[in-house]
Amino acid sequence: MLLSWRQRAPSALGIVTGAVAGLAAITPAAGFVTPLAAIPIGVVAAIAGYYAIILIRGSKKVDDSLDVLACHGIGSTWGVLATGIFATIGATGLLAGNSHQVVVQIIAIGVTWGYSFLVTFGLAKIIDAVMGLRVRMMKNLWVWTSASMVKAPICEGVEMKKIEAIIRPEKLHLCATSWTRRAFRE
Image (cartoon, rainbow, N blue to C red; front, side, top):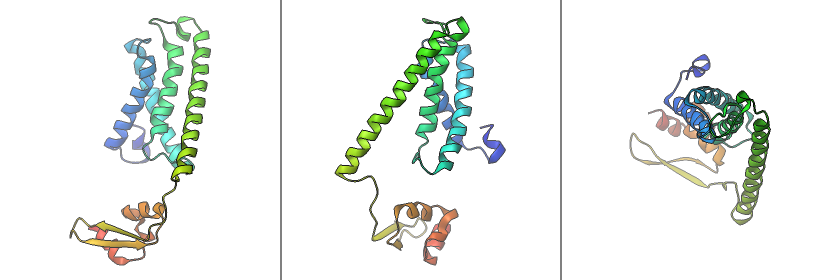
């Protein structure tokens, strides 16, 4: 929340996203660190998750509409690494004098990321072969306007990328009809 004040107004979604990133980070370390060590783990996860969201949204190469990669992926990766640093219960980490535990945690991170990539890639290929990963062109799209509860056409033959932009008020210029612009401004 504090970081988002620098660029825009904070939102409840941003607060919850930071909390989820902190929870994703402390999950791997939960049985091995003290509550005092959980605080820096959560803070670093929230900061890393915030900047990962900005980086991923700006790249346009990763379709992560729910910020899962930024929150869970980056947050839990930090949590696994932080376990190797802060562990004192049941295992000893770097701060307790066991630098080997950090190496073990880094190997675990690599194996987990590799496994996740391979399984996701395989599932995406199977889904693409069976029914396709892309949404097909739509001939007609209708929307119910909240003001009049009238079913109204948006645009014909618009790709799904543009439909999302049409529904967002700040990007209504992609639709050609003035009626649609008026309907979404109400």
